[in-house]
Length: 108
Image (tube, rainbow, N blue to C red; front, side, top):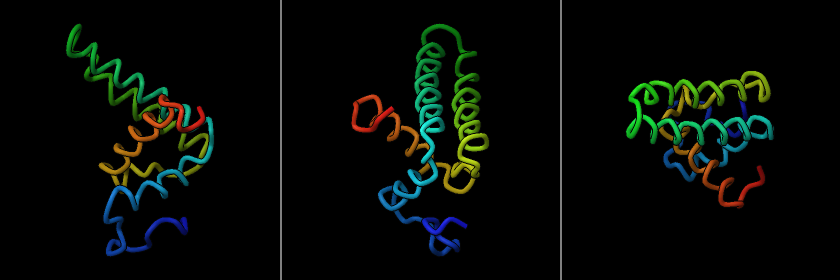
């Protein structure tokens, strides 16, 4: 088990601020991070298109988002996505990583 991750349920992350450093250790590979950023960008496009054009884009959004992120984890990171244990914090992490990247605070 990764030393940055709590070992028991009692030690689960109490806040997103405590979780995010672990999230970033799980996204050390630059290709994986890029896949996350591209996937999150496509999710946002799908959400807009789903609301204003065709509802089927709303179905495509999670498939595209999780698909690209999971390729990053299973192929490049060789780890299990944090989504399985921390779904809300993981989603928040995806959007924070995306925001930091598109605003230039994190290298793409």
